[in-house]
Image 1 (cartoon, rainbow, N blue to C red):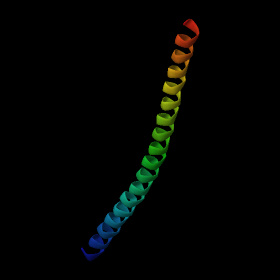
Image 2 (image 1 turned 120 degrees about the vertical axis):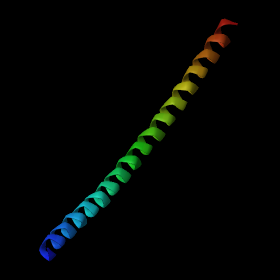
Image 3 (image 1 turned 180 degrees about the horizontal axis):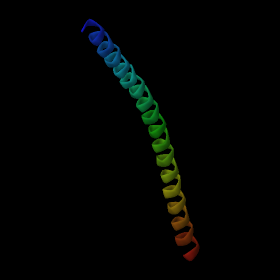
Length: 63
């Protein structure tokens, strides 16, 4: 039974380590995703500015 306990202990330890590694992986993924999101935000802002600029040019030339 002691042997069984030891095996279960190792299994649990392995699972815990796996979960910790998974946590690190998830953190990295979230970090990458947040980077991508901020990039997208910047792109969207630039696009909005471009559109506003285009509208301003159109109204300016039409007058």
